[in-house]
Amino acid sequence: MSNSTFVTAINCMDGRVQLPVIHWMQEKYDAPYVDMITEAGPNKVILEGTDQQIETIKSKLKVSEDAHGSEVLAIVGHHGCAGNPLPKEEKYEKIKESVKLINTWDFSFKIIGLYVNEDWEVEVVTE
Picture 1 (tube, rainbow, N blue to C red):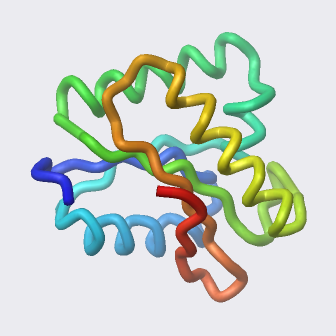
Picture 2 (picture 1 turned 90 degrees about the horizontal axis):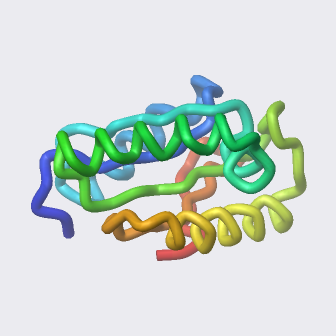
């Protein structure tokens, strides 16, 4: 459990996945606020994005970590993603790869991977 009032998620911009992730993280980490960094197909952007896209994500993570004291970061993928349309099994692998990559970015977050399924329920990919 986090002692912070903030946790963070790199999530898809798809509005269907916002509330499931927010509610899951609030309950799991007892944090009232979730900083949401959104991209269309966030795993694809993390793994294949331009240097500028990656730097933008890193600068937002820095604000979340430094200014808000966030200690947990979720990397999210979801069913039916238009920005990164992959089968569930491949999406799970991309989430794991994204977590592994972000762990090299010199932040102190505990990084987890989440998947939002076709029922808009959160599944833990990696913690």
